[in-house]
Structure formats: structure tokens, C-alpha cells
Amino acid sequence: MGSNFYNHWAQIMGHTIGRLKVTIIALTAALAALMSPAMLSAQETEMPVEAVADEAAAGATGYVPMAPTEGKGMATDPRTGEGGTLLKSMTFQDQYTQDGAYALWMHNWILMPVITLISLFVLGLLLYVIARYRKGANPNPSRTTHNTAIEVIWTIVPVFILVIIAVPSISLLAAQYETPPEDAVTVKAIGYQWYWGYEYPDHGGFEIVSNMLSDADALANGEPAKLAVDNRMVVPAGVPLRIQTTGADVIHSFAVPSLWFKQDAVPGRLNEKLLTIEEPGVYYGQCSELCGARHAYMPITVEALPMDQFEAWVLEQGGELPGAAGAAEDAAEIPAEEVEAVSAVAE
Image 1 (cartoon, rainbow, N blue to C red):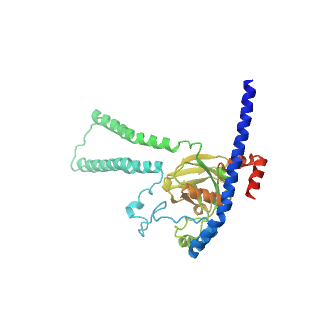
Image 2 (image 1 turned 45 degrees about the vertical axis):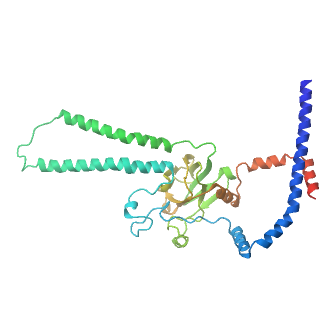
Image 3 (image 1 turned 90 degrees about the vertical axis):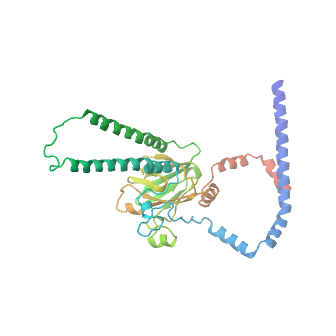
């Protein structure tokens, strides 16, 4: 008895919700039909001719590659001073990922001070030994073969130095092998002889083929020669990326210095690594594995866009957004009688 009552009540509620849905859709369609002519006429009278022309031009051109920022995501030239000073050209590029920023801090404030102090100490010790124990100043050389205190010091001090270096090094190593989250955006970089291909499995599986631009075309676009490409690897900024790499023929290496990212692309193997680009921009790299005669001519250009612009770019490439298929299936599940009712009201 209880089961029958529940089933009957569920059927009544289902029919009620269905009718309510049809009513809302019908009212929305009728309201849109009434307002469209008025809104259209208002737009036609209020929009200047220049605005219409600009809108038409934007619609015609669609995606426009982002202009690079001088010194950001690219190497600096110490000869011309473009992009930075000579001192800046002697260290790593500015970093735009958390791992890169941490690695740059470790290099500047741990490794370089330790290396400098050790080098100066060894140099001073060498000069002291040369001056103090030369033959003229020390005609009767010492026959000492062991010194317990010195041996203990030169054993303990290096161990202490290695521990200081090891703690941040292990932390950085662990961070670089962090597993991408499930909702990370997947991009598959495929190395060919001698160009790159980028697949987007989460967005319909389309592929972008990327070849190097000539020096004249690169400079005309305001980009560095030998690094600019015709089709960039476009990704969203500020979200986790799952970068997968593989090779179609020989071993390549996908490397972008300003993102602290390098991963081999090996035929028959799919490598995977987490990448999160902190801010929009254009970032340049190159294949970093000797892969043949034109190894030096397969650059990498990564363009990080805000999520809404990235989704617009995906749709322009013929891809699809995650969840779009589910929305289409939900729309397909609307009963035929509801669709006919909406059509009748709209007419």
C-alpha cells in the first residue's frame, strides 16, 4: 500500500514539474519574441557606425595571438641590453610557476652563497699554503702526517653543508613530481622531426601543429627570432595543467625555462607532469634533446590565457568544452511533447 502511494505521488509530482517546466520555457520564449524587435531597433539606433565596424572586425579575426612582453618568458640579450642587464643574463629567467620561484630562490640564496664561500675559502687556503710553506720560507718541511682535529673538522663541516643543501633540494624534487589533480587540463605535446604537435584530449581531441616562423616573420610580429611559431600551445593560466609528452619518431625534450619545466618526449612512452602557470603571458622554450639535423629549429611557444579566453579559443579551433556533451544529452532527454508545446507557444 505504501509503495503504491509513493509511486502514485511520484508520478503526480513528475507531471506537475514537467508542466511547470513547459510553462516557464513558453513564457521565456514569448517574452524573448516580444522584446527582440524592440531591442534590435534600439541597438541599431544607439550603436555608432564605428562600433559596428569594430565588432564586425573582431568577429572576422577571432583569436588574435597575445603580444609578448619584453624580457618575460624569454632569454635576455646582454649585447643589446634588451630585456635586462648583463647581470640578469647571467642567471635564470624570471619564473612564473611556484616550483620555478622556489628553485630560483634556492639558487640565489642557498647554492650561490655556499658555492661562493667555499670557493673563496679554498682560494684563500691555497694562497696561504703557497706563501707559508714555500721552500724559501720553510727550508725544513714538516713531517706531520695526521691531525685529528683537522680531520674531524673537514668531515663534519661538509656533512653540515650537505644537509643545508639537501633539505630544500628534496622539497623541490618532491614538488616537481607532484601528481596532477583529476580536474587538471590535459595537453599532450608530441615531438616530431622537426616540429611540435599539441593535442587537447579534454576538449574534443583536436591537434595543433606548430612550426617555427622565419626570422623576418618573427621580428615583424615583435617576437624573438628562432623562438616564434605559427601556432602556439594555448593553455589556461592559473589552473593545474597535465602536460603529457611523447615522441613520434626519436627522443625529444619539451623545455620552457621560464616555467621551470622540462620533460622528455620518448617514443612509445607517455610522460606526465603537473604545470600551473601563475599569470597570463607568452613563454618561449626549445627542444632540449638532440633529435637530428634540425633539432635547433623546433621551438616551443606557450601562450597562457584567462580561462574564458582559452575556452573561446578552443571553440574557435573546432573543439568542445568539458561538460558540453552532458548538457547536450540532458537537452535530448526533454520529452517530445514538451518540445512541441514550446514550439506551438513560440509560433
